[in-house]
Image (cartoon, rainbow, N blue to C red):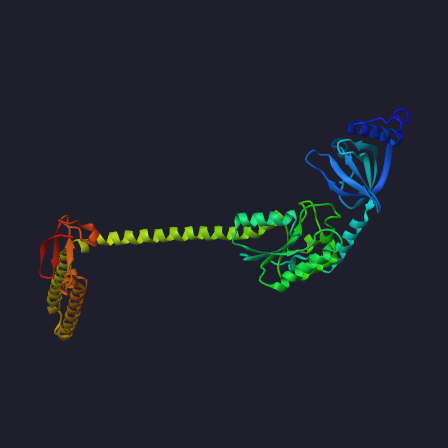
Length: 425
């Protein structure tokens, strides 16, 4: 027996929007203002200036927001891990059907459990010297092989590989996969670091993941990861989360990068810088060589235009005239000295004669020395050894076959005379 329409209770049919509005009215009408105490998590503040976060305890969590106008009156900066007491009103966010607290005022109530654990481990490792600058290693100048410890399916590895492929596609990358979130992730990260060290051949290592809440990044705050980084023989770049995220991994690593993409840029940026240095030095060397060649060419051209090379016979005549002049001066000097010495007493005549002989011998030696110099510098002497000098019609000496053209007349000077020739090739 089918029940009649009169027996079926009538149920109101709501649209999703209508039902959500009813729920919002009930929540806001019955609860009104609330005060919630808990630990902040997943704090984020977009460019709008509003602040979004989660307030949680051991068993539950609730979303919350502080509008930009109320953010200005907060006595502290909200951040993951601190314990707060938030005052505001409970409301329903109609677009996704979730409820949240619109916070008007918030007081800091101490550190949450995760933040307290973070500070305790940071203090412990800092006392052991794991954060000291002196123990941090320099990154290699030209890495050939880069190791990466991260999730093989996450956004971080894609960002790293995109940067490396775009800038230096010939770099070799070895990925040591590990979970980067959740239970057991810290042990996997530490094992992956140790594995790359055992493998060998790795020049630098990137350890990290993309952004997330304090809970998401917590494996990089575990002591087992910090110890693995500290004992690594390979220099390590920590690239965890976003620029505002700091982990224990950042403090122990040799270099901290604000993001995984930035870590890849740090690695290949050093190679880029090295190549720029090589190019700059190559340009400097090229300029210096060109300058040296121009100076050498200038000196050569100046020598080629000199008096000796243009008219070799003139140099010989100059040296012969100098010798003749010296001989004349010597004879005149001797005659004057002889006439003067005749007037001296007879006792000095013998010594005077000896002195004159010595002076004459010295002058003769000078004359012979000048004659030898003439022979050494006389270009005609070179011609006597079988060499020749060829001149163009304008009298310039020819130094290269490229200076003449077929059919051009040239004049060749040899030891015994000269002759004219026509260039055929």
